[in-house]
Image (tube, rainbow, N blue to C red; front, side, top):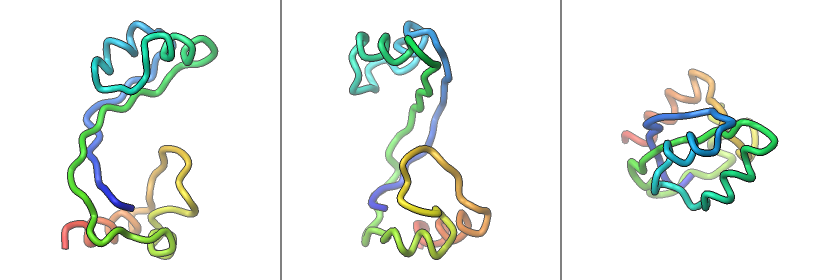
Length: 93
């Protein structure tokens, strides 16, 4: 883990115009990309801001051992309460 961010807002919508309005200029996707994504399913849009860099970066094995993740993250997930407390202690140290 190299950085920590804060989720500011989320939207799940099948409407490409709603998604485009929600994300505004905070996206790497074009309006055509968003239109394509919403064609077959609702899209999860997450607005977040970077809070800080983690120095030194945390290794995957540390995060697994602490219960923050079960394996290499490939999607949005959540940590166990114990893992979350460990993570807060590490980033606030």
